[in-house]
Image (cartoon, rainbow, N blue to C red; front, side, top):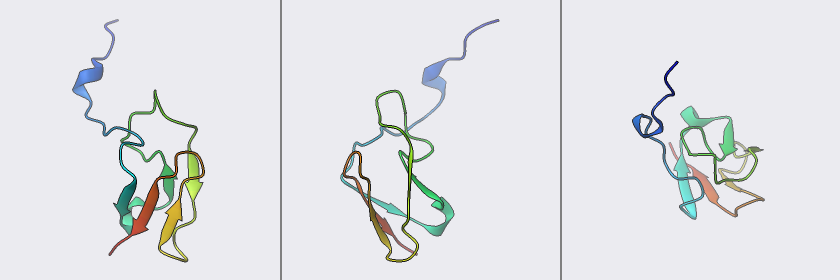
Length: 68
C-alpha cells in the first residue's frame, strides 16, 4: 500500500504567529488548531474564549481573539 504524500495536505505552521483571530466557527478552540501541523508543536489544549473573547495558550503563549 503506498504511503500518503505529506506535501499533498496543506497545513499552516503551528505556533508561527503570536496572535490569531478566530470566529465562532472555530469553536471549541484548541491550540494548536485543526489544520496546523502537529509534529513540532505541543499537546493540544482547549482554550475557553467564549466568555471574554480572548484566550492565551499556556504552552506557547499564542494569543487568540474571537472576532465576528
